[in-house]
Image 1 (cartoon, rainbow, N blue to C red):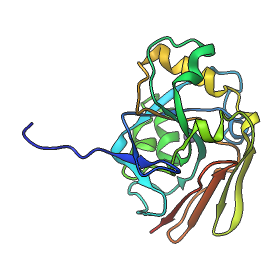
Image 2 (spheres, rainbow, N blue to C red; image 1 turned 120 degrees about the horizontal axis):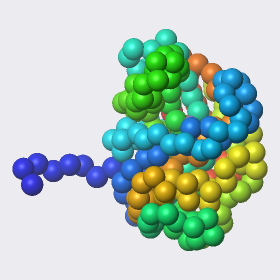
Image 3 (tube, rainbow, N blue to C red; image 1 turned 45 degrees about the vertical axis):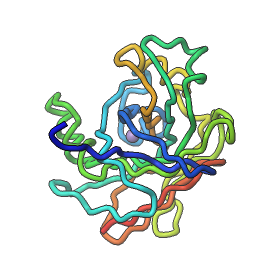
Image 4 (tube, helix red, strand yellow; image 1 turned 90 degrees about the vertical axis):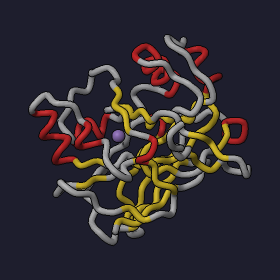
Length: 224
Ligand code: MN
């Protein structure tokens, strides 16, 4: 190698070992109330976009308000961390590939995302940018079980901002993994952000974001 690339990793709850990150995928729309608040089609099948692993922010860190946007929004999401994978994974086998779960933020430059959508261009400029993927520690599934219900929430400056329940996910975790594995190989180290409940809104400098899912380690960031 002519130079070394740093390994991006996340802490694991109850362990001194860390989880190395390979790819980051995000589900586009997965909660009805959020689809309605953005005025999108409720019957569309799940679709995916990607972020890069060096866009991860560790919980507790500061996040710089990004350039180019006037509408920088939070999307609090359940994150699935994979320990193995494959292509065309059957729904019934999908959970056997899951290492654990975390809470993440799919930070979004909403104005740029909407503008690229209107022009039928890719979403990169709105979704894939510096520090756009804050993520908390991963809880192994052997500790928390596989999650299909439970509160998912985000507080901004101590006030409730996003609230929902994992039961409201249109596409459940096994369906998300199965669908993703038809379009790309899923493998150990992949993170899948599974979509956000209602309540997305703009962030400002100085905002403190704290989010959680029942049974998992919280995620927190401060916008600076
Ligand atoms: Mn999202």
